[in-house]
Image 1: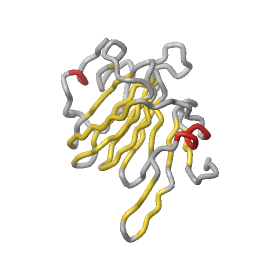
Image 2: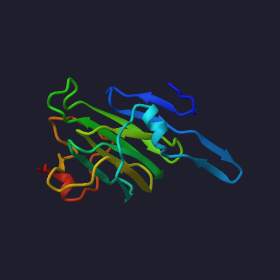
Image 3: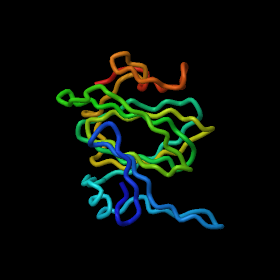
Image 4: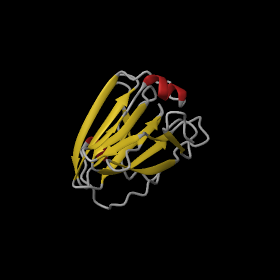
Length: 175
């Protein structure tokens, strides 16, 4: 589906989560793209009031995640590099509870991923390095931050790696 601004929406297996392909204006100098405009994203069905922006920079084979908060929606994009990005529905009352889906996000496909509140979010860096930017709908809160290990068998995510580089937190269940 494309809206009247030319932005393309790609549905996912989850009705609340979508991939967004912004309009990219390429020329001999490089490119320009608009990465967020409140009224346009509202038209696309994303009504989240984003209040915090975050950036992570990581090396190849790093997995960051799987993190979630039942209060936090995110809009994620890769500014530099390439990632295998995964979301999983952690809402116990949902028909898709513990189901997951993966996406390739990169600086060349320009895709953004809207991650609804209650969905875990994580990624594996496929390029030498990756710079990932995400907007959050509420402020990070250590009291409501949750997560599970990248290889949790109850979720069954199929990662294209066997021995990733992990932080201590990302290798264990928390909260």
